[in-house]
Image (cartoon, rainbow, N blue to C red):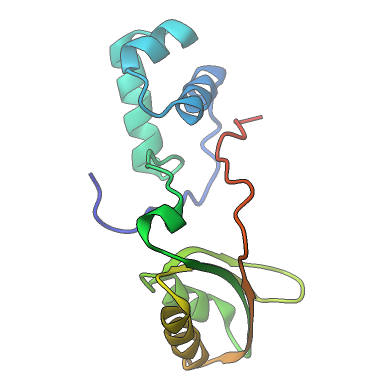
Length: 159
């Protein structure tokens, strides 16, 4: 198990149809055995194991437990829009290292960076906002507090 942050794939792996099917099978049920997946996609258990290892090692895929943060004691989630002066990437990299940030993207449009944070309460969210606002280059933030989680899916397939 990798203890560090997930590696994000920086280039397309040009996945064949079998690898795409493996991903789709795991998106449907991440606990399926390699043997079951192999039967579904027409490969041996060993071949599935090798392909999954390659997908994970390349950063193209992670196998994780998706949770409902509220049930784990994290009562406050928010999306923070960040506007930056100067270089955007260094600011995004600092935000991505925050333990409360679970999703950080550089964007085009109104915000330079969007950061989703998961906090125990409003006090922790305020601490996170103060931390982000203190990062050199941060010009402005806007916080969109989540009031209700209506849908959270990660099974959109490989198209």
